[in-house]
Image 1 (cartoon, helix red, strand yellow):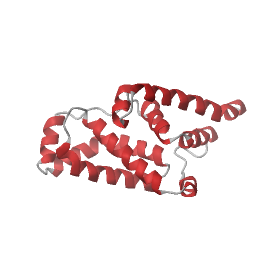
Image 2 (cartoon, rainbow, N blue to C red):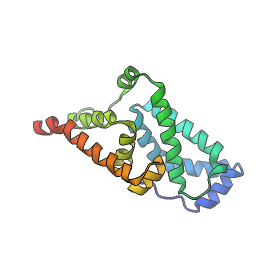
Image 3 (cartoon, rainbow, N blue to C red):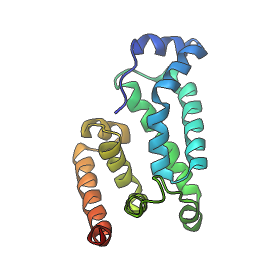
Image 4 (tube, rainbow, N blue to C red):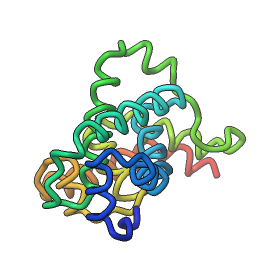
Length: 175
């Protein structure tokens, strides 16, 4: 889970006035988590790089509209997920399957199968699972990021765990 920026409101005000140093603080704070999430959502480095770049451009343009009702991290992740969904929709199914790169060390077969199983989850389910199980966000934060109910988040996480268990049953038996 991303720690909140120190003096977040001050940094946001500085960004609104065009302070690139302040915007760089936001970039440095959130880049790693956003990149891991984009990579998990899109399956390859090139698309994850594109998603991060687009998300930060959109954030820079939209920061003046940020109303501080939510945490900045929630706002940034919501932008990122919208970008990921748009990029994902633009690709054909064959392009998406052919572009997948192993996220883990390819020498570990169980990790490869886990990665493939996560990538095979439906978009919103994958997003909920990645944010909860991998990035460590709370379910209420995920609901806010994805603009869905907490009940939907819980259901997606539960269903994702079940689908992953089923997908990995054969792999675990082989160990």
